[in-house]
Length: 226
Picture (cartoon, one colour):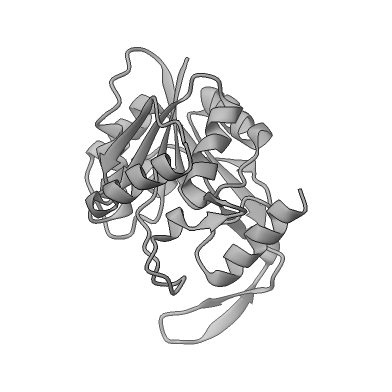
């Protein structure tokens, strides 16, 4: 069964306070996005990789590949859309697969996804067709009502969602083909809106999303202690 991954890398450097798009910031001497791509290359033999980037970042991509001697053979670069939904849709439209196939959708700034976790998710998707990695909340959780009041909820009933989210390819294509709704927050919400059940699979605490300077410092620490 063919396996694909769409890596969404449309971020800017605003929250980082840098002019460099966050996915191209180096950690331990290598850009985040290149580490993310290598995580999938090293985990799944023959996986087909699609990277969604803003058109304004294409030159930066080429520069990074040249500067770091990164082998971009077999990687499809796709122009991102105005939202994450539209970026993923653009990526899906490049996939021409006959028969059964699986596709993951992953944040370009999650470089620490382990090979074990990646393979576990794809294996689960082969059985359940729509799987999402989650971790428990370690913090207390409160919910706000529309009138501004708040109340505590049982944190055991709360799961924090990660990526890659992995799906049967045709299921994800049908779900995205139904069109965009503002309330979509991730790929699971798109598939769930179409009526398909989402299966939760254990994620990993180390699978952090690097979006702030604090995240970047934690990533440097993690690599320094590997």
